[in-house]
Amino acid sequence: MKYENLILAIIVIVLLVAPLAMYSGLGEDEGYFGGSDDQGSDGVSETGYEPWFNSFWEPPSGEIESLLFAVQAAIGAIIIGYFFGYWRGQGKEE
Image 1: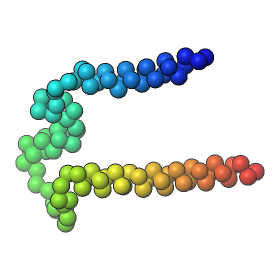
Image 2 (image 1 turned 90 degrees about the vertical axis):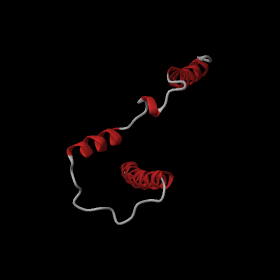
Image 3 (image 1 turned 180 degrees about the horizontal axis):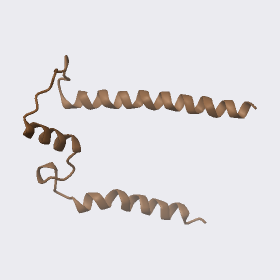
């Protein structure tokens, strides 16, 4: 019983270190950690597809785009969490 936390900590450390050891020194240039967005946009550009419209605003950098995506995800998580908490609280009042 007292070794449970130690065993769980070791498992977590192994799970965190194993991917870093397997891909040490290899990055996106070698094809690792590439996303489906890149592959999809490359596939679409090969067909000669022309978009119907363009964005009216493009973030100035990738970091700002990631920040806006994270803020959007956080707002969604807050809304979903609120409604699950409200639903759970209504069940306890009965």
